[in-house]
Length: 296
Image 1 (spheres, helix red, strand yellow):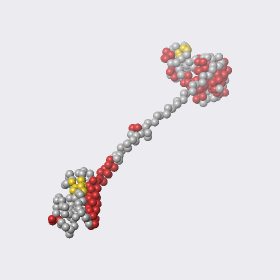
Image 2 (tube, rainbow, N blue to C red; image 1 turned 120 degrees about the horizontal axis):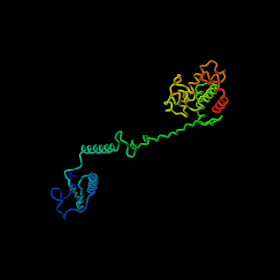
Image 3 (cartoon, rainbow, N blue to C red; image 1 turned 60 degrees about the vertical axis):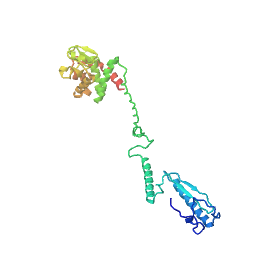
Image 4 (cartoon, helix red, strand yellow; image 1 turned 90 degrees about the vertical axis):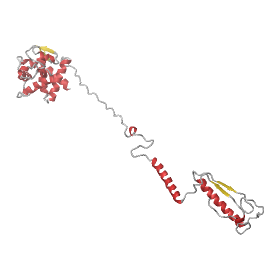
């Protein structure tokens, strides 16, 4: 402990050389001068400050400050007992180092709280469950059902199968952009040739492999218009299709000069070259009624 000097008055009786604090003396004066009281007060203040400093530092042993009895000479005995006497108050350099370490620790704790780059903060949703990346359900598209073809009620004494075949003839003629007169001629011709049924041929077994409604025996004639594959109208498979057979008939009709002004019998006969060409005319009125019903 640092020596704070002698507290006694060097000029008073019983100087430092001829007395001991451990030896009680009955000769000492009990009166205390004002100068000694001031000295004692200053020493107590200094001791209190030192005690606060030591108490505020961690890892120090307890500091015991014993204030001795103030005897008649005004002496104060102070003893500081330290369990670790080799560790006095740190030097200025040590204080600076301790302060730097404290700042470094505080900074490191502050840095530990910062999330690493690319790491989501605590409590924030992970990328897998982030609302921005959550796949939204694809809205279901309502597929509108295609409108069913309007079934036309049979007219002119026809059944439904005959009416459907007549409709196929008229719709194909519309796609070819031919006049209404050509439609009537085509329907009347099919009435005479096949009674508006799709015929297969007993002579051509292949024709029976395709959709048909009747079987005929007039050579190799097939289909609604009884066209013969051997005459160059087309293949058996194609001629068994009402649409294809109609296109073949109308294409041939358009090749006849002035067909629009010809009587129905002459126009149909010019295409079909039938042995009974005059019979087509009898179906004209019925064919007209059927075409009107389909176009309505």
